[in-house]
Amino acid sequence: MRGALPPRPTSRDVAERAGVSQATVSLVLRDRWHGRVSPARAEAVRAAARELGYRPNVAARTLRLGRSRTALVVVPALTNEFFARVHAGAVRVAAGDDVGVVLYTSPLETGPARDPFASAGATLDGVLASSMAAEALAVLSGEGLPLVMLDSEPGAGAAATVNPDIAAGMRLVARHLLSLGHRRFAHVAADVDSWTFRERARVLAAELAAVRGARLVGTRRAPIGVADGVLAAERALTAAERPTALVCDDDMLAVGAYKAARRLGLRVPDDVSVTGFDDLTVATAVEPELTTVRLPGEELGAAGMRALLAALRGESPGTTVLPVELVRRGSTAVPPGPAAPGTRE
Image 1 (cartoon, helix red, strand yellow):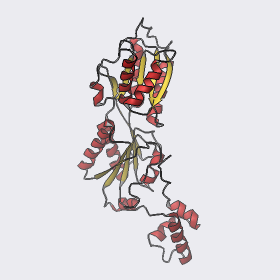
Image 2 (cartoon, one colour):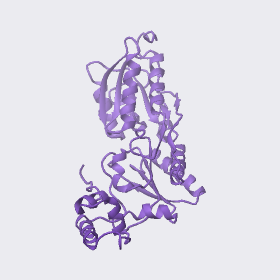
Image 3 (cartoon, helix red, strand yellow):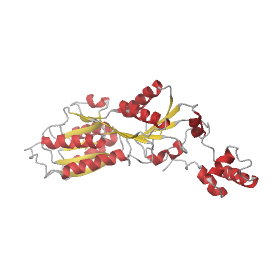
Image 4 (tube, one colour):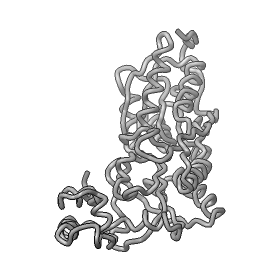
């Protein structure tokens, strides 16, 4: 992906280049090879390390010695209110355990994140990352450095995963709209290739497939933002078969849907119902107020930090799923015309 740095070389790469084992690499680079490794092999390891630009993982060594007590928190952006809440929750728990937090934003989200400490050689105890692919954190997490993922695919190479119940959230949205009588849906989907958005699409499709006559008349993808939400919603609302409900992956996309409806002379919710996801402050700033899924952002960050601290103690936190809530407000109503029966197959 544009702007990404190549992966940082590992001790395995050095071992392969020098034709030795990783244990030998560790002995040589920690200067414990004397009497255990021949001088020729030691020099071969040092030469391979120089050629590859390898630097030992100081953070993992510090973790074993227990000196650093510093965690790296990685989020796509702090301009998004949800990630600011995640950061606040993580800092609160870390402070209670006398652990420092370093914040790093990686707007590429699913591409490889750059190492912010490539030149500083800083030490870290672990990494807490939100809404990213685990493989994107390979450079940041280093060798053996505990990684806890938030709002990400469970078990994807992390020591633990903490997720809001995304499936339940989209299920609540779909069933709420179906109970009102909606049968023609359009999905204004976030144009981000990550587990959390794939899960929303999967559940929405499954819920509609379970109700006779319900169907998805279109999916319009857009980067998360109001302007892009406007364009995506306009395309959905001017399609040959107009939906009676717009299901948006994010509150900012939903605000864009409001603007698109108004530009087309449509009223929310009289002509089209709109739902969001996150329950950001903007959800109550628009008129009518937005029906949306409330995600526990601050508790997500707090639970993630607790899981990371548990991993640092040698425990296995596993996967944690946090409950979510559908907040019903004025942006949803029965569709125009006669309501369809609410029979589920």
